[in-house]
Length: 217
Length: 220
Image (cartoon, rainbow over all chains, first blue to last red; front, side, top):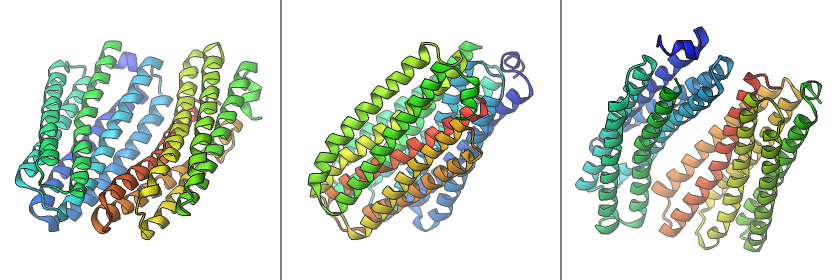
Protein backbone atom coordinates (compact mmCIF):
# COMPACT_ATOMS: atom_id res chain seq x y z
CA UNK A 1 0.00 0.00 0.00
CA UNK A 2 3.00 2.28 0.50
CA UNK A 3 3.34 3.33 -3.12
CA UNK A 4 -0.30 4.14 -3.70
CA UNK A 5 -0.66 6.07 -0.48
CA UNK A 6 1.00 9.25 -1.72
CA UNK A 7 -1.70 9.32 -4.38
CA UNK A 8 -4.55 8.06 -2.25
CA UNK A 9 -3.60 10.12 0.80
CA UNK A 10 -3.04 8.86 4.33
CA UNK A 11 -5.19 7.77 7.25
CA UNK A 12 -8.74 8.03 5.94
CA UNK A 13 -7.79 6.87 2.46
CA UNK A 14 -5.92 3.89 3.88
CA UNK A 15 -8.88 2.85 6.02
CA UNK A 16 -11.17 3.22 2.98
CA UNK A 17 -9.02 0.88 0.97
CA UNK A 18 -8.86 -1.55 3.88
CA UNK A 19 -12.65 -1.78 3.70
CA UNK A 20 -12.30 -3.05 0.12
CA UNK A 21 -10.32 -5.93 1.56
CA UNK A 22 -12.95 -6.50 4.23
CA UNK A 23 -15.72 -6.57 1.61
CA UNK A 24 -13.98 -9.11 -0.59
CA UNK A 25 -13.22 -11.29 2.48
CA UNK A 26 -16.97 -11.39 3.24
CA UNK A 27 -17.74 -12.15 -0.41
CA UNK A 28 -15.24 -15.00 -0.39
CA UNK A 29 -16.79 -16.44 2.75
CA UNK A 30 -20.23 -16.04 1.18
CA UNK A 31 -19.35 -17.89 -2.01
CA UNK A 32 -17.84 -20.75 0.00
CA UNK A 33 -21.06 -21.05 2.03
CA UNK A 34 -22.99 -20.94 -1.25
CA UNK A 35 -20.91 -23.86 -2.58
CA UNK A 36 -21.74 -25.89 0.55
CA UNK A 37 -25.37 -24.87 0.22
CA UNK A 38 -25.56 -26.03 -3.41
CA UNK A 39 -23.96 -29.35 -2.48
CA UNK A 40 -26.48 -29.82 0.33
CA UNK A 41 -29.44 -28.98 -1.91
CA UNK A 42 -28.36 -31.69 -4.35
CA UNK A 43 -27.05 -34.30 -1.93
CA UNK A 44 -28.59 -33.76 1.51
CA UNK A 45 -31.59 -31.41 1.19
CA UNK A 46 -32.42 -31.42 4.91
CA UNK A 47 -29.26 -29.55 5.86
CA UNK A 48 -29.37 -26.58 3.49
CA UNK A 49 -31.45 -24.18 5.67
CA UNK A 50 -28.62 -23.03 7.91
CA UNK A 51 -26.41 -22.16 4.98
CA UNK A 52 -29.12 -20.04 3.37
CA UNK A 53 -29.48 -18.00 6.55
CA UNK A 54 -25.71 -17.54 6.71
CA UNK A 55 -25.70 -16.30 3.10
CA UNK A 56 -28.40 -13.74 3.94
CA UNK A 57 -26.48 -12.59 7.04
CA UNK A 58 -23.24 -12.22 5.11
CA UNK A 59 -24.97 -10.25 2.34
CA UNK A 60 -26.31 -7.83 4.93
CA UNK A 61 -22.84 -7.53 6.48
CA UNK A 62 -21.30 -6.82 3.05
CA UNK A 63 -23.99 -4.20 2.45
CA UNK A 64 -22.96 -2.43 5.66
CA UNK A 65 -19.31 -2.43 4.61
CA UNK A 66 -20.29 -1.06 1.19
CA UNK A 67 -22.18 1.83 2.78
CA UNK A 68 -19.23 2.66 5.08
CA UNK A 69 -16.89 2.43 2.12
CA UNK A 70 -18.87 4.91 0.01
CA UNK A 71 -19.12 7.25 2.96
CA UNK A 72 -15.38 7.20 3.54
CA UNK A 73 -14.66 7.40 -0.17
CA UNK A 74 -16.35 10.77 -0.47
CA UNK A 75 -15.08 12.04 2.86
CA UNK A 76 -11.47 11.24 1.90
CA UNK A 77 -9.12 13.12 -0.36
CA UNK A 78 -9.27 10.94 -3.45
CA UNK A 79 -8.83 12.40 -6.89
CA UNK A 80 -12.18 12.69 -8.74
CA UNK A 81 -11.17 10.18 -11.45
CA UNK A 82 -9.92 7.66 -8.89
CA UNK A 83 -12.97 8.20 -6.71
CA UNK A 84 -15.34 7.51 -9.60
CA UNK A 85 -13.50 4.30 -10.50
CA UNK A 86 -13.39 3.16 -6.87
CA UNK A 87 -17.12 3.86 -6.49
CA UNK A 88 -17.86 1.77 -9.58
CA UNK A 89 -15.65 -0.99 -8.23
CA UNK A 90 -17.47 -1.00 -4.89
CA UNK A 91 -20.84 -1.15 -6.64
CA UNK A 92 -19.74 -4.09 -8.78
CA UNK A 93 -18.30 -5.90 -5.77
CA UNK A 94 -21.61 -5.45 -4.02
CA UNK A 95 -23.44 -6.74 -7.10
CA UNK A 96 -21.42 -9.94 -6.70
CA UNK A 97 -22.84 -10.47 -3.19
CA UNK A 98 -26.36 -9.70 -4.48
CA UNK A 99 -25.88 -12.31 -7.19
CA UNK A 100 -24.65 -14.93 -4.74
CA UNK A 101 -27.81 -14.35 -2.69
CA UNK A 102 -30.03 -14.53 -5.80
CA UNK A 103 -28.26 -17.70 -6.93
CA UNK A 104 -28.87 -19.26 -3.51
CA UNK A 105 -32.57 -18.33 -3.72
CA UNK A 106 -32.95 -20.02 -7.09
CA UNK A 107 -30.84 -23.04 -6.14
CA UNK A 108 -33.09 -23.47 -3.08
CA UNK A 109 -36.02 -24.14 -5.46
CA UNK A 110 -34.12 -27.09 -6.92
CA UNK A 111 -34.41 -29.11 -3.71
CA UNK A 112 -37.89 -30.37 -4.57
CA UNK A 113 -37.06 -31.01 -8.20
CA UNK A 114 -35.62 -34.01 -9.95
CA UNK A 115 -32.33 -32.69 -11.28
CA UNK A 116 -30.47 -35.13 -13.50
CA UNK A 117 -26.89 -36.08 -12.73
CA UNK A 118 -25.39 -34.29 -15.78
CA UNK A 119 -27.00 -30.95 -14.86
CA UNK A 120 -26.01 -31.39 -11.20
CA UNK A 121 -22.40 -31.84 -12.30
CA UNK A 122 -22.59 -28.81 -14.61
CA UNK A 123 -24.07 -26.62 -11.86
CA UNK A 124 -21.57 -27.84 -9.25
CA UNK A 125 -18.70 -27.14 -11.67
CA UNK A 126 -20.01 -23.64 -12.32
CA UNK A 127 -20.21 -23.03 -8.57
CA UNK A 128 -16.71 -24.48 -8.03
CA UNK A 129 -15.31 -22.24 -10.77
CA UNK A 130 -17.14 -19.23 -9.30
CA UNK A 131 -15.50 -19.91 -5.92
CA UNK A 132 -12.14 -20.00 -7.70
CA UNK A 133 -12.87 -16.73 -9.55
CA UNK A 134 -13.80 -14.93 -6.31
CA UNK A 135 -10.63 -16.32 -4.68
CA UNK A 136 -8.60 -14.87 -7.56
CA UNK A 137 -10.47 -11.55 -7.32
CA UNK A 138 -9.57 -11.47 -3.62
CA UNK A 139 -5.91 -11.89 -4.62
CA UNK A 140 -6.28 -9.17 -7.27
CA UNK A 141 -7.55 -6.75 -4.63
CA UNK A 142 -4.79 -7.73 -2.19
CA UNK A 143 -2.18 -7.22 -4.91
CA UNK A 144 -3.74 -3.91 -5.92
CA UNK A 145 -3.60 -2.70 -2.33
CA UNK A 146 0.01 -3.80 -1.91
CA UNK A 147 0.94 -2.43 -5.31
CA UNK A 148 1.75 -5.79 -6.87
CA UNK A 149 1.10 -6.88 -10.42
CA UNK A 150 -2.39 -8.23 -11.25
CA UNK A 151 -1.89 -9.17 -14.91
CA UNK A 152 -1.56 -12.95 -14.40
CA UNK A 153 -4.49 -13.09 -11.99
CA UNK A 154 -6.65 -11.06 -14.35
CA UNK A 155 -5.86 -13.43 -17.21
CA UNK A 156 -6.70 -16.38 -15.00
CA UNK A 157 -10.09 -14.85 -14.10
CA UNK A 158 -10.81 -14.22 -17.78
CA UNK A 159 -9.91 -17.82 -18.59
CA UNK A 160 -12.19 -19.30 -15.94
CA UNK A 161 -15.01 -16.88 -16.77
CA UNK A 162 -14.84 -18.16 -20.35
CA UNK A 163 -14.88 -21.74 -19.04
CA UNK A 164 -18.03 -20.96 -17.02
CA UNK A 165 -19.67 -19.56 -20.15
CA UNK A 166 -18.94 -22.81 -21.97
CA UNK A 167 -20.42 -24.90 -19.13
CA UNK A 168 -23.44 -22.57 -19.11
CA UNK A 169 -24.01 -23.18 -22.83
CA UNK A 170 -23.69 -26.96 -22.36
CA UNK A 171 -26.14 -26.84 -19.44
CA UNK A 172 -28.65 -24.79 -21.42
CA UNK A 173 -28.35 -27.26 -24.32
CA UNK A 174 -29.06 -30.10 -21.93
CA UNK A 175 -32.02 -28.35 -20.30
CA UNK A 176 -33.63 -26.90 -23.42
CA UNK A 177 -32.85 -29.58 -25.99
CA UNK A 178 -32.59 -32.69 -23.84
CA UNK A 179 -36.33 -32.95 -23.24
CA UNK A 180 -35.86 -34.07 -19.62
CA UNK A 181 -37.34 -31.01 -17.93
CA UNK A 182 -40.77 -29.46 -18.01
CA UNK A 183 -41.12 -25.70 -18.52
CA UNK A 184 -41.32 -24.86 -14.82
CA UNK A 185 -38.17 -26.83 -14.01
CA UNK A 186 -36.39 -25.27 -17.01
CA UNK A 187 -37.38 -21.80 -15.80
CA UNK A 188 -35.94 -22.41 -12.32
CA UNK A 189 -32.74 -23.97 -13.67
CA UNK A 190 -32.16 -21.19 -16.20
CA UNK A 191 -32.67 -18.46 -13.60
CA UNK A 192 -30.26 -20.23 -11.21
CA UNK A 193 -27.62 -20.72 -13.91
CA UNK A 194 -27.83 -17.16 -15.22
CA UNK A 195 -27.44 -15.84 -11.71
CA UNK A 196 -24.39 -18.05 -11.02
CA UNK A 197 -22.70 -17.06 -14.28
CA UNK A 198 -23.21 -13.36 -13.48
CA UNK A 199 -20.82 -13.77 -10.52
CA UNK A 200 -17.79 -14.43 -12.74
CA UNK A 201 -18.88 -11.78 -15.28
CA UNK A 202 -18.92 -9.21 -12.49
CA UNK A 203 -15.57 -10.40 -11.12
CA UNK A 204 -14.11 -9.90 -14.59
CA UNK A 205 -15.54 -6.38 -14.72
CA UNK A 206 -14.03 -5.64 -11.29
CA UNK A 207 -10.63 -6.64 -12.67
CA UNK A 208 -11.02 -4.31 -15.67
CA UNK A 209 -11.83 -1.53 -13.26
CA UNK A 210 -8.83 -2.28 -11.04
CA UNK A 211 -6.61 -2.26 -14.11
CA UNK A 212 -7.82 1.27 -14.88
CA UNK A 213 -7.14 2.26 -11.27
CA UNK A 214 -3.63 0.87 -11.64
CA UNK A 215 -3.08 2.90 -14.79
CA UNK A 216 -4.32 6.03 -13.03
CA UNK A 217 -1.71 5.47 -10.32
CA UNK B 1 -34.66 27.81 -0.19
CA UNK B 2 -31.90 26.44 1.97
CA UNK B 3 -28.16 26.72 1.77
CA UNK B 4 -28.11 26.25 -1.99
CA UNK B 5 -29.61 29.65 -2.65
CA UNK B 6 -27.11 31.43 -0.44
CA UNK B 7 -24.03 29.75 -1.94
CA UNK B 8 -24.73 29.13 -5.57
CA UNK B 9 -25.62 31.34 -8.47
CA UNK B 10 -28.33 31.46 -11.12
CA UNK B 11 -27.23 28.46 -13.16
CA UNK B 12 -26.97 26.29 -10.07
CA UNK B 13 -30.46 27.29 -8.94
CA UNK B 14 -31.78 26.41 -12.39
CA UNK B 15 -30.23 22.96 -12.12
CA UNK B 16 -31.85 22.41 -8.73
CA UNK B 17 -35.21 23.53 -10.15
CA UNK B 18 -34.79 21.04 -13.00
CA UNK B 19 -34.10 18.29 -10.48
CA UNK B 20 -37.36 19.17 -8.73
CA UNK B 21 -39.20 19.15 -12.04
CA UNK B 22 -37.71 15.75 -12.90
CA UNK B 23 -38.72 14.37 -9.52
CA UNK B 24 -42.28 15.67 -10.03
CA UNK B 25 -42.42 13.82 -13.33
CA UNK B 26 -41.24 10.61 -11.64
CA UNK B 27 -43.90 11.07 -8.95
CA UNK B 28 -46.59 11.47 -11.62
CA UNK B 29 -45.31 8.26 -13.23
CA UNK B 30 -45.43 6.56 -9.86
CA UNK B 31 -49.08 7.55 -9.38
CA UNK B 32 -49.89 6.20 -12.80
CA UNK B 33 -48.06 2.97 -11.95
CA UNK B 34 -50.15 2.59 -8.78
CA UNK B 35 -53.40 3.19 -10.69
CA UNK B 36 -52.28 0.71 -13.34
CA UNK B 37 -51.64 -1.93 -10.63
CA UNK B 38 -55.12 -1.37 -9.31
CA UNK B 39 -56.58 -1.78 -12.78
CA UNK B 40 -54.61 -4.96 -13.41
CA UNK B 41 -56.29 -6.41 -10.34
CA UNK B 42 -59.70 -5.29 -11.71
CA UNK B 43 -58.72 -6.82 -15.05
CA UNK B 44 -59.37 -3.49 -16.69
CA UNK B 45 -56.82 -3.84 -19.48
CA UNK B 46 -58.26 -0.94 -21.48
CA UNK B 47 -56.85 1.31 -18.77
CA UNK B 48 -53.48 -0.44 -19.11
CA UNK B 49 -53.42 0.23 -22.86
CA UNK B 50 -53.98 3.95 -22.21
CA UNK B 51 -51.49 3.92 -19.34
CA UNK B 52 -48.82 2.51 -21.68
CA UNK B 53 -49.14 5.56 -23.94
CA UNK B 54 -49.22 7.97 -21.02
CA UNK B 55 -46.21 6.46 -19.26
CA UNK B 56 -44.24 6.56 -22.49
CA UNK B 57 -44.94 10.23 -22.96
CA UNK B 58 -44.10 11.00 -19.30
CA UNK B 59 -40.82 9.13 -19.65
CA UNK B 60 -40.00 11.14 -22.77
CA UNK B 61 -40.67 14.38 -20.87
CA UNK B 62 -38.48 13.16 -18.00
CA UNK B 63 -35.74 12.38 -20.53
CA UNK B 64 -35.91 15.94 -21.88
CA UNK B 65 -35.53 17.37 -18.36
CA UNK B 66 -32.60 15.05 -17.77
CA UNK B 67 -30.93 16.35 -20.94
CA UNK B 68 -31.53 19.94 -19.79
CA UNK B 69 -29.85 19.11 -16.48
CA UNK B 70 -26.85 17.67 -18.33
CA UNK B 71 -26.57 20.69 -20.63
CA UNK B 72 -26.84 23.16 -17.73
CA UNK B 73 -24.31 21.21 -15.66
CA UNK B 74 -21.76 20.95 -18.43
CA UNK B 75 -22.18 24.53 -19.55
CA UNK B 76 -20.76 25.75 -16.29
CA UNK B 77 -23.11 25.14 -13.38
CA UNK B 78 -21.30 23.92 -10.25
CA UNK B 79 -17.62 23.13 -9.87
CA UNK B 80 -16.06 20.54 -12.18
CA UNK B 81 -15.56 18.07 -9.36
CA UNK B 82 -19.21 18.17 -8.21
CA UNK B 83 -20.74 18.21 -11.68
CA UNK B 84 -20.14 14.50 -12.19
CA UNK B 85 -21.75 13.64 -8.86
CA UNK B 86 -24.89 15.62 -9.69
CA UNK B 87 -25.02 14.26 -13.22
CA UNK B 88 -24.90 10.73 -11.79
CA UNK B 89 -27.88 11.55 -9.56
CA UNK B 90 -29.82 12.86 -12.57
CA UNK B 91 -28.91 9.71 -14.48
CA UNK B 92 -30.05 7.47 -11.60
CA UNK B 93 -33.28 9.43 -11.25
CA UNK B 94 -33.85 8.87 -14.93
CA UNK B 95 -33.31 5.15 -14.36
CA UNK B 96 -36.26 5.20 -11.94
CA UNK B 97 -38.40 6.72 -14.72
CA UNK B 98 -37.18 4.05 -17.16
CA UNK B 99 -37.99 1.25 -14.73
CA UNK B 100 -41.51 2.57 -14.10
CA UNK B 101 -42.08 2.76 -17.85
CA UNK B 102 -40.85 -0.82 -18.38
CA UNK B 103 -43.03 -2.05 -15.52
CA UNK B 104 -46.25 -0.39 -16.69
CA UNK B 105 -45.59 -1.62 -20.22
CA UNK B 106 -45.19 -5.18 -18.97
CA UNK B 107 -48.64 -5.21 -17.30
CA UNK B 108 -50.50 -5.84 -20.56
CA UNK B 109 -48.99 -9.36 -20.72
CA UNK B 110 -50.83 -10.24 -17.51
CA UNK B 111 -54.05 -10.14 -19.55
CA UNK B 112 -53.75 -13.80 -20.48
CA UNK B 113 -52.32 -14.91 -17.17
CA UNK B 114 -53.82 -16.92 -14.42
CA UNK B 115 -52.98 -14.61 -11.51
CA UNK B 116 -53.49 -16.58 -8.25
CA UNK B 117 -55.58 -14.80 -5.62
CA UNK B 118 -52.90 -15.31 -2.97
CA UNK B 119 -50.36 -13.48 -5.11
CA UNK B 120 -52.66 -10.53 -5.76
CA UNK B 121 -52.37 -9.29 -2.17
CA UNK B 122 -48.58 -9.53 -2.29
CA UNK B 123 -48.55 -7.77 -5.65
CA UNK B 124 -50.66 -4.84 -4.37
CA UNK B 125 -48.51 -4.48 -1.24
CA UNK B 126 -45.39 -4.53 -3.39
CA UNK B 127 -46.79 -1.77 -5.63
CA UNK B 128 -47.89 0.38 -2.67
CA UNK B 129 -44.49 0.06 -1.02
CA UNK B 130 -42.77 0.90 -4.30
CA UNK B 131 -44.84 4.05 -4.58
CA UNK B 132 -44.06 4.93 -0.96
CA UNK B 133 -40.38 4.41 -1.77
CA UNK B 134 -40.64 7.04 -4.52
CA UNK B 135 -42.52 9.41 -2.19
CA UNK B 136 -39.66 9.13 0.29
CA UNK B 137 -37.09 9.67 -2.44
CA UNK B 138 -38.86 12.91 -3.35
CA UNK B 139 -38.85 13.98 0.31
CA UNK B 140 -35.17 13.05 0.62
CA UNK B 141 -34.28 15.06 -2.46
CA UNK B 142 -36.17 18.04 -1.09
CA UNK B 143 -34.47 17.65 2.30
CA UNK B 144 -31.11 17.54 0.52
CA UNK B 145 -31.73 20.73 -1.41
CA UNK B 146 -33.27 22.51 1.57
CA UNK B 147 -30.63 21.14 3.93
CA UNK B 148 -33.29 19.68 6.25
CA UNK B 149 -32.26 17.40 9.11
CA UNK B 150 -34.96 14.87 8.13
CA UNK B 151 -32.92 13.61 5.18
CA UNK B 152 -31.63 10.53 6.97
CA UNK B 153 -35.10 9.57 8.13
CA UNK B 154 -36.42 9.51 4.53
CA UNK B 155 -33.43 7.61 3.24
CA UNK B 156 -33.68 5.02 6.00
CA UNK B 157 -37.35 4.54 5.09
CA UNK B 158 -36.34 3.91 1.44
CA UNK B 159 -33.81 1.27 2.52
CA UNK B 160 -36.39 -0.33 4.80
CA UNK B 161 -39.03 -0.43 2.04
CA UNK B 162 -36.59 -1.81 -0.51
CA UNK B 163 -35.74 -4.64 1.86
CA UNK B 164 -39.43 -5.31 2.47
CA UNK B 165 -40.13 -5.38 -1.30
CA UNK B 166 -37.31 -7.89 -1.73
CA UNK B 167 -38.88 -10.09 0.93
CA UNK B 168 -42.30 -9.94 -0.77
CA UNK B 169 -40.65 -10.78 -4.08
CA UNK B 170 -39.09 -13.86 -2.48
CA UNK B 171 -42.52 -14.94 -1.15
CA UNK B 172 -44.03 -14.50 -4.62
CA UNK B 173 -41.29 -16.57 -6.25
CA UNK B 174 -41.59 -19.22 -3.52
CA UNK B 175 -45.27 -19.48 -4.32
CA UNK B 176 -44.83 -19.35 -8.11
CA UNK B 177 -42.01 -21.83 -8.35
CA UNK B 178 -42.73 -24.16 -5.45
CA UNK B 179 -46.34 -23.90 -4.41
CA UNK B 180 -48.73 -22.89 -7.12
CA UNK B 181 -50.27 -25.19 -9.67
CA UNK B 182 -50.43 -22.67 -12.46
CA UNK B 183 -49.53 -22.83 -16.10
CA UNK B 184 -45.97 -22.15 -17.21
CA UNK B 185 -46.83 -19.11 -19.33
CA UNK B 186 -48.29 -17.42 -16.23
CA UNK B 187 -45.24 -18.34 -14.14
CA UNK B 188 -42.95 -16.80 -16.75
CA UNK B 189 -44.96 -13.59 -17.22
CA UNK B 190 -45.77 -13.00 -13.54
CA UNK B 191 -42.12 -13.68 -12.65
CA UNK B 192 -40.93 -11.12 -15.20
CA UNK B 193 -43.46 -8.51 -14.06
CA UNK B 194 -42.37 -8.99 -10.44
CA UNK B 195 -38.74 -8.53 -11.53
CA UNK B 196 -39.73 -5.28 -13.23
CA UNK B 197 -41.59 -3.99 -10.15
CA UNK B 198 -38.70 -4.78 -7.81
CA UNK B 199 -36.24 -3.06 -10.16
CA UNK B 200 -37.98 0.27 -9.39
CA UNK B 201 -37.14 0.22 -5.67
CA UNK B 202 -33.60 -0.94 -6.50
CA UNK B 203 -33.23 2.14 -8.70
CA UNK B 204 -34.68 4.34 -5.93
CA UNK B 205 -32.15 2.87 -3.50
CA UNK B 206 -29.33 3.72 -5.93
CA UNK B 207 -30.59 7.32 -6.01
CA UNK B 208 -30.48 7.45 -2.21
CA UNK B 209 -26.91 6.12 -2.22
CA UNK B 210 -25.99 8.98 -4.55
CA UNK B 211 -27.82 11.50 -2.35
CA UNK B 212 -25.70 10.20 0.52
CA UNK B 213 -22.60 10.86 -1.59
CA UNK B 214 -23.75 14.43 -2.24
CA UNK B 215 -24.41 14.90 1.44
CA UNK B 216 -20.93 13.64 2.37
CA UNK B 217 -19.24 15.91 -0.16
CA UNK B 218 -21.16 18.76 1.49
CA UNK B 219 -22.24 20.00 -1.90
CA UNK B 220 -25.37 21.45 -0.39
